[in-house]
Length: 370
Image 1 (cartoon, rainbow, N blue to C red):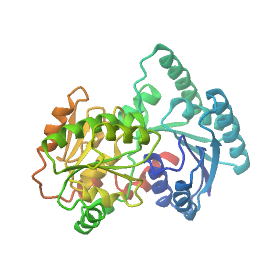
Image 2 (cartoon, rainbow, N blue to C red; image 1 turned 180 degrees about the horizontal axis):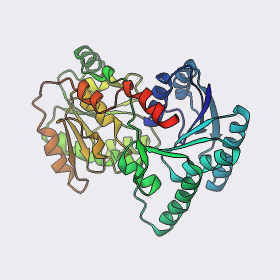
Image 3 (cartoon, rainbow, N blue to C red; image 1 turned 135 degrees about the vertical axis):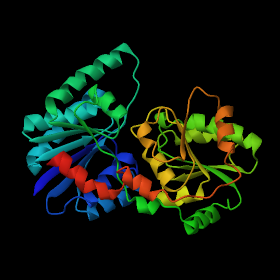
Image 4 (cartoon, rainbow, N blue to C red; image 1 turned 45 degrees about the horizontal axis):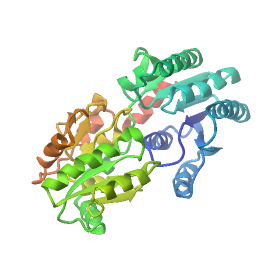
């Protein structure tokens, strides 16, 4: 049995990489691989329940307990040392790194090469548009380390591959797979969530994302402000949590929208929240692939994304793309074109055909590990 070390750049919050790893482990061949997962960030009390789900799958979790105030140099040296020691202690055969950052992808791979790991896999789950000269220099330097240290490259989209590796050539595109049957529209789930938040007769605009800069909640609130001026029946449902949540709450209060915006926190059953929404809006500044936009389509939701969301999300006729240079008023007009309701369609077969369902995971594992 091969021992696989998974590495992420974030903690145990319910995010895209965490969901990717959970399903990756759950649906991989049980007799071929055992998993250890290293994540650097400290856990908080809301993370322990999710951590238990991984432990129930047999995953050993190693938390780096990195403090947010740690300097970049101290963080990198600590990351290198911890990964190297973990590999030696666990006698790992494979390292699979998905951090979203070029630096924190390069460092574990370098440690793995020096430690003698035979299969060293880089997975790019995001992209950013660094524009400063120093950022570009740093990116190119660590790209060279990835090229030297990785035995194979993979990414969730062509754009993510180009960001991490400089080119999508010789990169295996691996879709983030989930149990897409769960995300088929369900009237009982819709009734349950809408009753829970007392929004039975409302026009509900939805978003599901961690509260971080690149998810662009600030612009989303500006858009919803324009929507609410034109439709007093409109509500905004935000599912997620994160470092900018307090800032977004303050913005909501300043705009006088406190009674029209629902902050749900993290959802154990995200599929139920998609059922409660009437339109999904995803105005990201950057995005690896935009898995939630795929889930929204899976639930039969009209889905409006920014043009920064990769076109790998263009799976059904339900998705549209708008420019972030368009005004909040223009976005609002598009959203309001759906406020008279529509019949929700079952898009499961189209999503499955595009290889986003868990049924594709064994094939991806064979391609990547073997």
